[in-house]
Image (cartoon, rainbow, N blue to C red):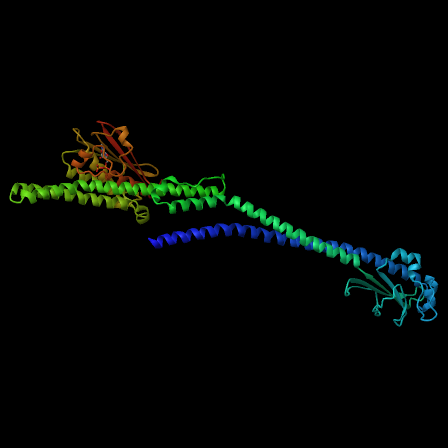
Length: 502
Ligand code: ADP
């Protein structure tokens, strides 16, 4: 008992844990998904912006390069300081030979360059002739134009180096180096990174919250399902709770609504099953009580004064044996009834010849009841295979014919008809006996139901025959029906599926 309680508790605890973690998982999954998508999107956008910015800077530098080059290509000798002086109108300090003003003074370079851009000119030996800035720049001779993006300590720098060729001689006369500090570019990129991180975190957080909230709403039916199961498990009277508690279906036409409906249907079925079990136990004990009471009565009688009276002794033994016989029949019928539920699983592939079984049962009944006129109307001319285990078909026919005999009155006439249509073989058993009222006809296939208990008991009936027949026929996917008029007779009809439908 304790173990059971512990198990139920641990199941409940697990369920709670599961429902929470499902929401978290949902929120987390969505957040990860959104972060990945946003991350890819942000990287692409960042690359795109960076490219545009870089292209802009590149075009400034190229403009400056072109403007400087244009000024120098007219010389036919390798460049020296005089040429630079002439071209850019600059003067040199006499002491240290440095330029006093820069090519920025020159209006066309000014138009092409900006303050982070350094234009330097080198002679053929790689010595610097001029530079717009005093910053020491590394220089290396190149064969053709070279553009490099290099990382300095603080900034990204765009370096363009190009040899200058004389227009007149086509000889190399020096080099130009453009060094552009991409400060704006770096700053904008940094800002973009911060912006994307902030937007990313905000979006991710908002989406997580929203998906958690949505998951809570969507999973509400699951919570209700859990609550219902808890309520049933925790109830003192589970059978009662099963009959009262159902999952409220809040959403319409979605999978969870279907699940709730399925669960409710399952509870309905369980409830019906439990009720049937309770009813069955009640019925069985009730049915057994009468023979047991009769046997007990006779034994009491014998104990008190019947032992010495051979007549009483004989009568009591006879009556007790009769009751024991009845109990034996009852137990056998109950066994048949419970087995009839499993025919589909156990005998699903069995077949039998309807014609042969029908004829055999007909002959047996004719022999056992010579006082009855049993008329056979047989349309089955050849072997006709039906999907049913032979003994079960025999049992069904015996139950129906037995009832026809039992409940016949003055007119002792029974008709047995065997025929077939495209899909079924049909057996019809007709009698002209007491018949069944419309009120009772609905209940005769119920377990232990007898229209007249005492009369049926006298005739050896337990009220189980028709329930057995009904379950067997249904188990083999057939149909059983009845038409009856009180005091005129009844017609029972059984259809069983053909093995080879036409
Ligand atoms: P029983 O063992 O009592 O015959 P059944 O399940 O075979 O149990 O039948 C249930 C009840 O249906 C019977 O008690 C009887 O009242 C009624 N019944 C069955 N067959 C017939 C029939 N052919 N004519 C009239 N009543 C019938």
